[in-house]
Image (cartoon, rainbow, N blue to C red; front, side):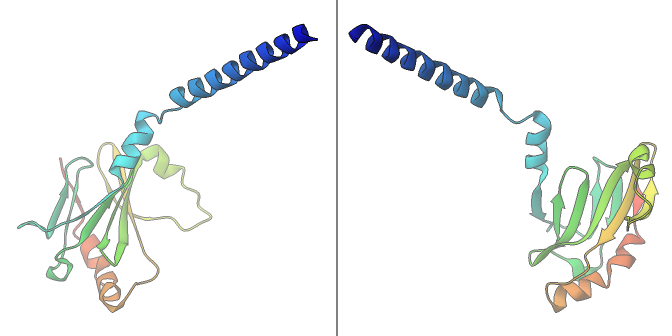
Length: 156
């Protein structure tokens, strides 16, 4: 009987070690990919308040916008393939989405899509706006979005 107890205990210890080792292995190999890390890092909201804040230029994607004085102190939220503009009380009054030409052509036709703004050699730019406003201030800023989008230009 003692011999069976010893084998049972030994088997339980071995199984526990295997399960624990497997858990540690999975935990260590399940680190986020570089793409996931970049997506997390790029989800940044920054308030723009420089001397030239009303002339926004995105050198990475290659476009620029000009904002009216009433947009002084706006915020920019950078995500993987979208850049949102707003203020602290509503950080997404409008958004510029960036697509490859293939991605743009594959957008479904049976649902609302962003509005085409322009393109360069590699990318297609489109915009979409919020449907609601957090307050009267952001409602007024929403009414100015079309004039801001009229200033959209691609840059080299």
